[in-house]
Amino acid sequence: MSLEPTIFVVDDDEAVRRALTSAGALLGHPVRGFASAAEFLTAYDTQPGCLVLDIKMPGMTGLELQRKLADDGVAIPIVMISGHADVRIAVEAMTLGAVTLLEKPFRLDELLAHLRRAVEKDRTERETRNKAADIDARLAALTPKEREVLDMIAAGKTNRAMAEELQLSVRAVEDRRARLMKKVGAHSVAELVRLLGTP
Image 1 (tube, helix red, strand yellow):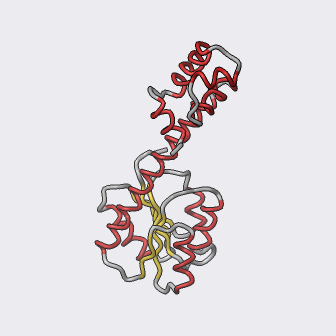
Image 2 (image 1 turned 90 degrees about the horizontal axis):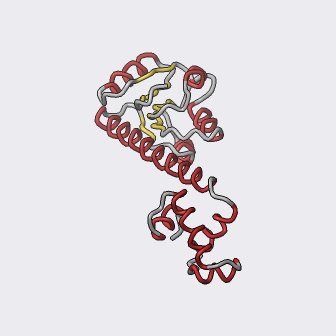
Image 3 (image 1 turned 180 degrees about the vertical axis):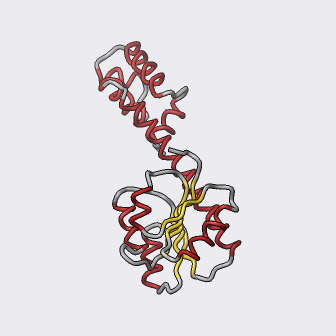
């Protein structure tokens, strides 16, 4: 699977699809066009990038595809396009997480600006998800006893207070604390608290 951001275009109108594909290529990313939501779903495998999606299409509509992706936990940023979007449709598209809704005809510079924004949004969100998954994996490697000490550190307890509560020597607490800091990859309590997302 390519890790290069790809602009996916789903529109049943071939002329519009060609125009959008040409426009997307101006950003220097690969562009793939699909005539239907079903075609896109068959080909898409959570690659990075963004999706340009027509709202009104035969078969599965753009909104239905957007809903399905949301239900499946697929977080690709979507630039919605429509020749006849009413307020209800616009609100639903934005509520479901569309980056924007462009009404045809739209300007090329306007489209490109939103595509850039969508690709960047995907990059930062993937980075955030990867960091969170990495932190979760590190925390999962802790033993129950190390996790217990971690929770106490997060609560602001001193080594002595932890030792008294756990009925251990201060040295034993310090050893557990050093091991968990190493496993989690934190060099200070402040960094550890940041990793845990504690305010």
